[in-house]
Image (cartoon, rainbow, N blue to C red; front, side, top):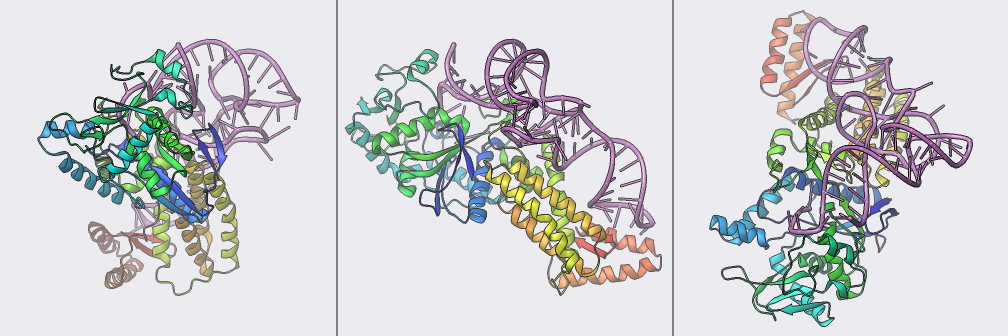
Length: 470
RNA sequence: GGCGGCGUAGCCAAGUGGAAAGGCAAGGGACUGCAAAUCCCUGAUUCAGCGGUUCGAAUCCGCUCGCCGCCUCCA
């Protein structure tokens, strides 16, 4: 499988370092507020990558995602609201996990909190000072950017160029304006931890270096996040990690493109955003996932109502076929198809191959979804002509779609079918209605359909008889 | 100023050297008691523009135009 590596600016063949377990780290949220819909993009995209690794590559995945529960924004928020940083962090951490659940994201293997790992961060800073890569001034500690030879290699920047562009807040304490904060002295009333440099807190996402090493080792496979993190965040992580260990940090750096709104980057500071939980309430998780995965993860993507609506229709086209088929064949005792059915199933093989080819090419979920849509079209055609045992091939076609849908987190539900007594009762009504229809009692039969619809049960009269879905 | 990306049918969007995927929208037809679902047909002689390389370019190179991101917290 090939993945585009920001570090080399090329698509490279990916294999886990130890050839069976992928160790990946995905930058997590700062829990000072709800996520907006753009924040959800990496969550969905890298979950899809993880699922693909597990289901189609046969690799185990150690998936680590931090929760940043101490930072300037949390402190600001606490000051504004009169609550404690811990209270705010807890509220939005809960909201975050709730969101993951609603989106059907596989839980990370580890979700460590920054505040649970302060000691490790202090160790890291001490080590950097020992190696003369960092220096303390008046209770603050800064990273000495010019002392790390590889500085700028991820974002393709040169220190000289950065200086000329300088929009950086200069500080008289810093040796160089580009030096960044590793430890920040606490002001009165701020949360603080004791350290060799006095009371304070870690700076600049030192946590990512510490947490990734704690769970994944000094050199791990994949570090992922939004492309707005390439510089300075990820560049600074490399400086810390590789400066401290002398070993390569992440082997592959993956970055998703930004969500835009009428062409401009969606962001809280611009105010052009929609909360993720609200969008989810309006469109549902399947639509949101389909929307993201029907666009390539590295490209910018414009958030528009029409785009979500198109995604809703396109995904329900697949889901409807699955549900209808499941309903038709639910009660069928046999699942052994005949030669005609076998031929049909063989005809789907090229689409499966195309799906894998697409996914293997830098997670081209767009091409993968195209293959899925082709399978749906072919299956619908087959449904229109097949009779008898040939139709049992539909079970395998549905199973194929579910298999291909798994990495995308789509089409997994069992078609909302009810079991047991409800199913028997509905079938009883369907039988009665069928009798009425043969007697051309359409007013009454339509009434049954109407009343069931009011209860959320959809009847569809097909050539194979009446089917029902929820 | 430095670094990087994008421009493909009405809209969204893959494809990055060898016959322009897929979805949404629109129009026509089929199926059908009605409804739902579905199927078929109709679309880019062309991939922002202009030059170049090549037997062959949406795909490579150069220039031009337009849009966007990072360089400050940011997914």
